[in-house]
Image (cartoon, rainbow, N blue to C red; front, top):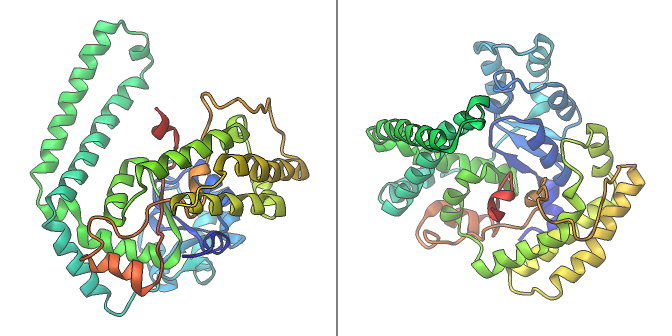
Length: 369
């Protein structure tokens, strides 16, 4: 397994819609962040600022998974609606510097094809993806209703009717999805190739919590006991983050923390402790976090002048899990349900001698609610 410090130095693959919050979180806990071109392409559509992205690209912290030729061709052919011209020109003129080229095995096609065949014959895996899609579809409609100022002021009987209508619309949309061919619905060949690409560039994948079950099924998962141990450790760490949101940290503060020895020592220690807890050597998990990690984190905040608002040892209620879940070597062990036969999992676990390809949730609060 990669030592924690080495895993952090490699990268985390951020595979989600663009947001300044996620970028800040990833760059605070990891040395480098890898994204697909689509992440950059969606910046303007999601009205996210490009200044922080350009700064991270210039600093070599953020990289785009592509080749210079492919990225330049995409930038030339595509119309980036709303993207600031200077940023577009910067991307086009610096393709050599800002890409991270995936290193795929020679037999990548056979690995992807064989793995996809197994996936398409796996009813449990397909049902899992269907359930993820349905939940995302339903959540999308309900979120739209909840964001309405009129809905929040409506009496309970009205909201009940609205929720039923939303569920009906979600059911219609999901039924349309189910009528599509399996190749369109699941894209297993595409998913498996992406997994190999992401693995070749990173030590972990950061993606939204909805899709975490798919990755965990594919690669294995925590045991319940280990997950409980990990979360018990978070109960100790959370007070540190309670009043310090990623949103409140400036880009300059994050860049300073990245270079702070106390901060990096704390992150490495926490990763090592979680790895030990996952592999059975739990020891004094919570005590060591309190005595070693929190002390180093507090030292880093003090050294870099990061203000701490109302920090208290018992402030864990309603805490913001601002990115703790991005800490490396805390995640599933390769070799789950399909580990014995899936050539993709076999490649990840044996041929590359990498036993960990963790999937991290963007919002740990989902585990606590």
